[in-house]
Every structure is written in C-alpha cells, then in structure tokens.
Length: 337
Length: 265
Image (cartoon, rainbow over all chains, first blue to last red; front, side, top):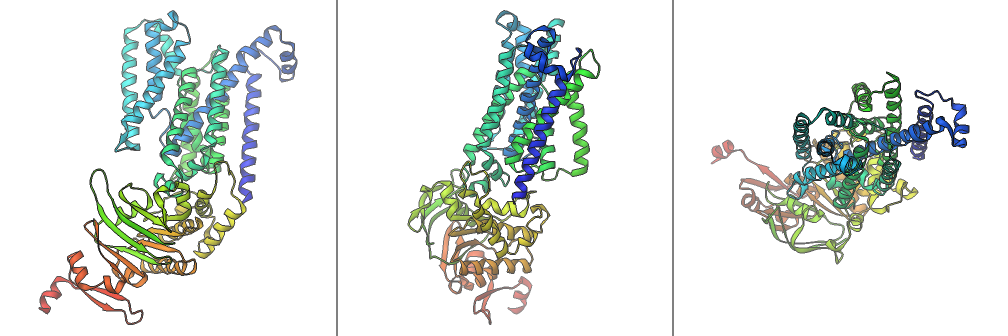
C-alpha cells in the first residue's frame, strides 16, 4: 500500500522537475539571446536591457503559464470529478463565451479606454461568473443538478454569446475588431504585475482549498448518493468546489483570454498515467497543466519567430492531437471515476 | 443493534409513497422487505438510508434518533449496499477502503494501518481478496456485489441495508451472497434489512419479513406467517400454492400457470 504513496511522490517530483526545467528553458528562449549561465548574474545586477527582458517580459510569462495552466487544469479535474462526466470543463460550460462577450462589450463601448484598462479583465471575469452561475441555476431540476441539462445549457449559452459577439464585431471598427480577436485567442503576455500576481495567488489558493475536498472528491467517484452513504455532505462539497472552480476559471480567463483544451486534456492524461485518486489528481493536474502551458508557450514564441503564434492555437492543436492518440490507445471508458 | 421505525411516512415531491410504517427489529435479526413493484419497498429503503427525507416519524437505532446524527456518524453505524455498484476504474482494494471514509477526518490524508487491516479482513471474509488489485470495472456482476458488501462491512456498521443485492445474478451467486450475509449476520451479530423480490429466497433466508402493499406494511412477522397463500394472493393478486421446504422447514411458494389452472378446474 505504501507503494502507492511512493509512486505518487515520484510522480509529483517528476512533474515539479519538468515544470522547473520548462520554466528554465522558457527563460533562455526568445529573440534576445540570453545564455543560461548568465541568468544569475543578470538578475543580480538589476540593470541593463537583459535584466528588463527577464524581469518584465519572460518571468511574468512563466508565472502566467504556471498559474493559468495549473488553474485551468485544476478546475477541469474538479468539475469532471463533481459531475462525473468526462466532457465537463470550464469551457464546455459556456464560461469562455460569457467572458468573451463581456470583453467584446467593453472593447466596443470603449470603456477600457475611458475608464481604464482594468475594465477588460473585469468584464471578462464578470462575464465568466455570470455565465457559469446562469448555467448552474438553469440546470437545477427538482433541487438537483441534471448534468446533461447542464452541458446542453452550457453549449447553448456559448452559442448565444458567440452570436452576440459576432453581432458586436460586425458593428464595430476594425481596430476594435482586432482587439477582440486578439483577446479571444488568448495570451500569456501581461504587463500588469498586479494581475499576474492575482492569477498566481488565485491558482495556488485554489489548489490549497481543493485539498480540503480531496476526500469528498474521492467519495464522489462513486456518485453523490453513495458518497452520502459514506458520510460525505455532498451538497456542501459540490457547491464549494463549484464556486472554487468558477472563480478560478473566471480569473484565469479574464487575464489570459481563452486558452482552450488545458482543462479538458490534462486531467484526463493525468488520470491515465496515475489513476483517479484525487489526492494525487489535484496536484498532478495542476503541475501537468503548468508544464503543458509552459511548453506550448515556448513553441508559440519560437515556431514562427520573430513573430508569435497565439498560444490557444498551440494548446488546441497539440492538446487535441495528443489526446486523440492517448485516448485511442488507453481508452477512456470510466476514466472519470 | 435494535432498529425501531416509528410511524414514518415519506415520498417524492408532495406525495406520500409510504405511510404509517411501524417496525421493530431486534439486534442480529435478518429481516427482509417484500412486496410487489410500486408497493413502496424502495421508498422505505431510501427513507432509512437518508436519500429521501422523512415527512414524519422517526427512526431509532438503539434509542438514538438516526436523523439527529451527522452524516458521518450515521455512516459509522449504517452501511448501504445498492442494487448496482458504480462502475469505476479503482481497484477492489481502493474501493473497499472507501468504507473507511466515515472514520477519516478532513486531513487524515493517508489510510491508517487500521484502515488497511480492516479492509483486508473483510475482503478475505467475502472472498474478494484474491482479486484485490483488479479494477472494479473488470469484475463480474457477482464479484462486484461481493466487493460492495466487503466495502459496506469495512464501515463496521451495526445495521446493514441491502437493496436487492442479488436481483440480476444467477442462482450460484444469489445463494453465495445470501449465505455470506447470513453468515455475517450470525458471526458479527449484524442486523440486516434487505429488499428482496424472490419470495422463496426471502422465506429461506430471512428471520423476519415485512410485506408491503400500497405504501403500507400489509403484514409483518416470521416467514411462515407472512408467506401464506392467502396473504400473497391479496398482495400480489396472483394465485399461488405454499408448502413447507422438507429440509429447512421454511415456506416455499409455487406459481401455477393459467392454463394448468383451467385444466385442473
């Protein structure tokens, strides 16, 4: 039995090393040639253009990748766990649509120029939260969540939101259009240190809080009714976890834009590798998501250098393909439980 | 553990599916709930497990009001085995260990030695230890049901509730599981309440039967009293013949087809 814990420990250590390695690689990758050996001296000198590039461009990106990748993947793991459905993730529940509509509204009305640039993440967050709670309350039937209903409503709300957005885009100037499209494609570039820190603390906080619910999440693998028979207050657990997942996704999406596939693919991959026990799933998904986004970001920055691909393109293509390959080999039958 | 069901009624939504249920079951009794489809067996069961809220009445375990217990405390006393086990990829060992959940606190992150030993003990008792590392989803229906019973026993309950645990199994597994429950019932002095469709199995294994009809208990008592042809005809609207099993002296119910019935008249 202790074999299990040793396996978990090794798995976690490997993932941490992968994240550190990818972060280090990301730090020395870019237009400006900075050697790995020079990093320590540049950072300690605190002057020069190299220092500025590291401190204000590359480091925040790395933090964003770790926080957003971890956060989205963690919420995917949580939502799949509480709803016992492999398709549930923040985006299939319509949250990206809602966030995008919120941002589009701000761009079109020019609020981000008149009120301040913080209006963009604010609108994204509000849009995401409003959508996800709308989906939640619309899918309650006779006091209980109907999961198929929830997915359907999520997809419908996504459609309505994207139509609304297309309407706004067709009415607005090409400058605004560019702004909206750019935001939608997602980016880890964030000049505002406060926002970067917010995402980081939110992600780490989400990970910490979710561990209070590792036990209920494990019981929920047997379904809500059986979890209750095992003494778990499922109503409270599911609600709190849902709120953690929603707020965390809202924050990630509002700052980084729509970066798809992380929340869906990574938890499944982690399940296939190490199993569905949430004591390892939570941290595994978080680290896996961080690593995945770090690597995707490196690819996005280098593949057509000096230009940069939107990171959503990489996560979508790479994530989707890897997923299909792994799935056709391992099979996803009952993987959620 | 002495189970006292006092005048409970419960149901879905606004309606009452069962009402005026009064039952007392002594410690160590193997009791069965029988009755036709829609008679309220499952509603009563769900009222006892807490899946449905009671509209009135109370349930006592050794004079303790069950509904005043926390979910955790309740799960330490009552274990439930449902008709279907959840198909999951977790190993049998992990699944059985779930039974220790009511004893673990929020940050009891790892299983204790007691947890593992308890799970092991009941896996051996139910004969599932030999495939402890297999995923639950790869077991046959009968093996899954045995694992579910092992999981329930790992909760070390005083009352074991089972909802038709043998309904979709062949007679080998039906008998195997019922023999096991009977053995546990005697060995651990576990009070057992089981929903069971098959009247002959009910008569053979149960010490006490509750026969339900239209949401109420039509009659309750020892099998020889309850499984009487007149009662069965009244409750099931079916003509039957009852006899005594020559070996076990328990009641046996025979059905007669319409054609034979016409010809014999």
